[in-house]
Image (cartoon, rainbow, N blue to C red; front, side, top):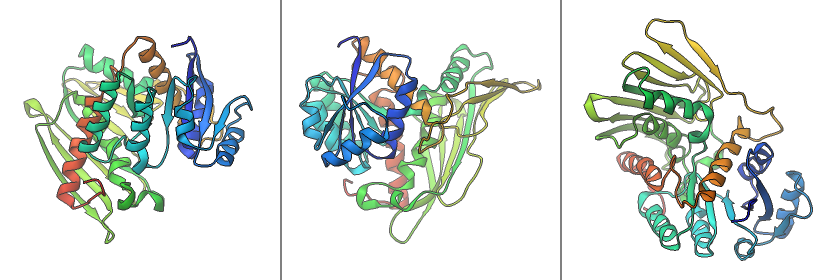
Length: 337
């Protein structure tokens, strides 16, 4: 790898826009050198919209970008049902890959992609950006140093109205693998292990798309998490982890927090702030934090590793195992099931 990590952006939608803009805040020598869309005109328009220079190559197909020998790593921000196929092409072309979540629709197809990446000996990671926020890393420190004792419970309710394009079983895109996956990964991050038992309840629409769900996750030692999502209303969307001697809360936007509240025993709460760069026309809240995962990719590749120490292939599979079971219970079927 050259000192500068050279990125190619695959897919020119809203999340790719935010990722490119967030790269302006990267603390590593990350550089976008190419973008690709299904049509060259779209790639050129995206280049202008994200204020990339005209030196950045604009391709009218993904294959052209994968063939570019100057590209070290690709960010894949295409629609959900293309994640596996497009990532697989990138891996087979020898590119390192950061693919938006959900990296796959189920465990079966995702394992095939991970196997291909391991065989090709290239870096591959699902872009579960939450894990790389400083507030999450601070929570990890509290868990590891046991300053509040052992983790006992975790809880979250992710409530937010989703647009119509998030409800499409034909595209393997429904609320459970959008906001539901965020809720599940929060619990898994807190406990650092697979649950011993998964109990799920939820509701769905007549078209087969899920609307809401609650996961009761039973962990070792009688510990548990209750995490829920709801796609047709609004709520505080905070996340709480309790310990023997206190608790930690992300007061809002638990999936991209800039504040952590720490309470020890009956003491007054202590607020720890992790300010993000000023808002600059992003499509999604706190998108400047996408730079944290880009920097982690840089560090991991620079260290010669093909998997993240923070969000490994197995971490992605842990979440998908739970989502697969929940969809089975609710009767939500994707085209790849």
